[in-house]
Length: 447
Image (cartoon, rainbow, N blue to C red; front, side):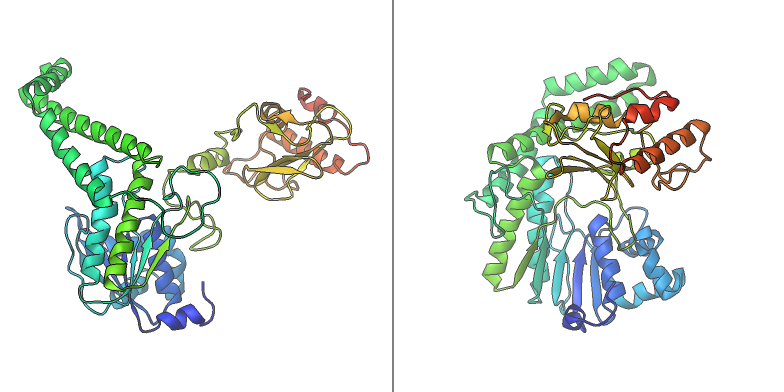
């Protein structure tokens, strides 16, 4: 949160920002920041309506989401937040992916954060949103305005390359107009293919085999769903292979790269200032809108949540044959097993080198002075009974990683062992882990 007026606040005072993607992961946080930190800035958002809710309904629904909790508390509750939205946010209902929306005059900044973010959508859908849709939006936004364009892209638009890749315009000679045209044409060709008699007969036979007793209507419905699914799968394969043949790992990065070039050309043609923002993988928030805030279940969240709830004991993140610096050795003098100095990291290394791997609220650091060991040995050593999921706070008996129940006798024994290991780590000749753990029936772990 901006505590006092600064250059950004002053520069945007009295301005109007046009924003897309506010119902998505990144866009809703941008909107929350604007409302919280820019008191003299107005916002216009473009939102697609749905069958069950209008665009305004969808914007109002944002106030129920955790990303707006701090703002809600700041302004004084639900009603006050809704009043703030109505006062500072104008909602336009529209869909930029299919046509140019109606965007009024008076826009000073356009932030386009909406996109098709699936890695491998059908190729026509990827181009329709990430290239053609983006161009539709910017054409509409600049019809009656000369705004500063802020285009949200991705850090992976450079494709599969080696070496250092400097920030700047992408260096390729691919005809994005032709690629978009062929992507849409591919959809028409695949659709036509599935309507041939032999293909329709195939879908009907599959549906009849599974639903013959349900009647012809059910069979027909299922056959059509199978046909549509076949179209999608074929277009996904088409897009994946086309992206790879041109040097991108997936349709998402490919179409975002093509979209960047299209936006650059449009900005140059109309003499507009353009900023391209290339975020990498976005995970949970460090502090704002709230510490640990995350929306989605796509990247590391399944691993983090599974670890926090005790469902996942460990997660090897390197090839098991990879050598690590140092030699963790849980059964010999001179080896130190201590709580990680860096919260939330599992660190392996010698006194001069160290490799850290994110683990959780508290991890283990294993230091040694001998030759390297494989990651398999390190994982087996760290996962020895009695060392699994140490207490988040070594001074407490109960862990704080998603376990609300009172600790069992076995868990108290584990935490007791953990504290003994921690306290023994600073002794001149620390005892072996196996010796410390013998009373808890912990096996020796020798690298």
